Length: 329
Image (tube, rainbow, N blue to C red):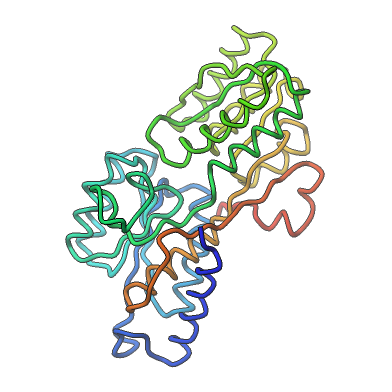
């Protein structure tokens, strides 16, 4: 994925706004409206993404709408999409909560003349503008490399447990593009560690309480459990709580994905061995720049990678690492 191309887009946007006009814009009164629809509204990851998108909107002179569901649920996100379509924005940046069930609702937006950019998660297979399939209409997918992130988490967890033992993945639900990829990467890495047994994945429906209960249940069945990979924020924090409640903090190692503010304490007290921090502010920033570039007549790469940062107790106090902790407000 071409991050350098995204940087070129930023430069192009700066030139357009510096000139006072962008292609297709007659005056400041014609500035476009761009909507950001997160997977969950009150989530540090998406709050941080919103901050990045807002910074980009101010930089290019666009109006930004931020509206999303209260929880990770197709039946809650679809009405939000319909409500946004009714407001007739020029573009929608969206984190689809399901890669199949959100195709039709987003196609409705596209057919209404609205540009679609997928951020964090995607529809279909995440490969867009190919001219084939029913989900290639978004102009770009902006995200970190989730398969690679899963592999790195797996490698670090293997090292933490001495390259042997039993582990499992705490995940949301099948069909969520990003967490599917993280689990895929984790399991690919574990194939290179023959002395580690990967147990059945536990799906928690993005409910940290359920993830905690599942962790306790697995430890009850498997007293020699060595590690857990939490594929997203609620999976990791829930598993951590379950391990704490069982009195096994430090004995059962946890590799997490995502970096909410409470991650600092989890790393320092040994609950988490590491976490993979995405860069949601960059996802929001580049997503809006891509949307703006497209609606003002400029070419946009179909995939933009924003990277991630590995956090541990040894580097979490480094300002260059800590700046990627997600903000809750």
